[in-house]
Image (cartoon, rainbow, N blue to C red):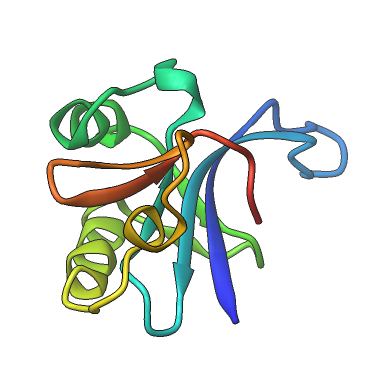
Length: 108
């Protein structure tokens, strides 16, 4: 069981749906937060990601909104978990940056 987080883009003015979004990653029970690397297009490390997210609206997959501060508080709480996908999966697409787990393949 987990929850995915996104930066929603291109909001429809008529219906309010977001047909496109940038996947930030997933919070899963018992695991450190797993970040989506997105090919390094938006950020290449945690500092760049924090800077990039400063003025963004973050949504979970259920439509709940988080401020960047709330998001990072959740991520830091998840860092206390013992397992990281990048350490368990061991593929060229899963890696650790600054002690955080990243994947460069789409996952949900």
